[in-house]
Length: 211
Image (tube, rainbow, N blue to C red):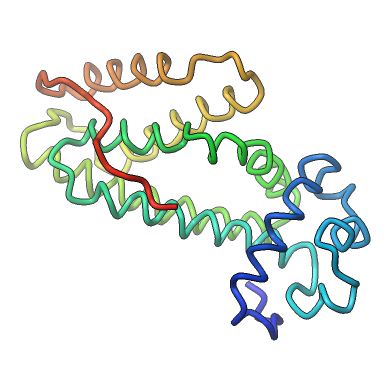
């Protein structure tokens, strides 16, 4: 990732810029958004913007890093959960929170750009690898505790879980009427049956998500 960010030690200003340019990427797409558009949204001159970000790729990488920090905090909350499925329910519910739903179109735009831009793709791969690793540990512990009864490797369970949540999230992003929570419950029920989970009541963990 680029380190050409002399004012990287001013996170509040960087966060303000990222918040203001997010709508530009959503409305115009990554390729269709010019630095002039971004400067206008951020209310900065080109020279002032370049003090914080030297390119659009820098901005997208910073958005990914910002999201990763937020989701890492969510995952830290469930790392010691007593139930694999309660942990999944909490994470998925966090995905459907008001703030996250508003960011879904931006995340889809970034994901689309990753299919064309190796630098963005690498940043996303690192993000997913970390989150998949956390779920892998949760699945391995659940298997050791007898909550899961499956020969499927913990990492493969984690990959499937991430893919399922991603799929539901994408559907919610393009269809505001889509019943995410109901579909999530059904998905968790199917996972329980497929993974031989012992019978327990799955409920959203009563935790307060980080800001």
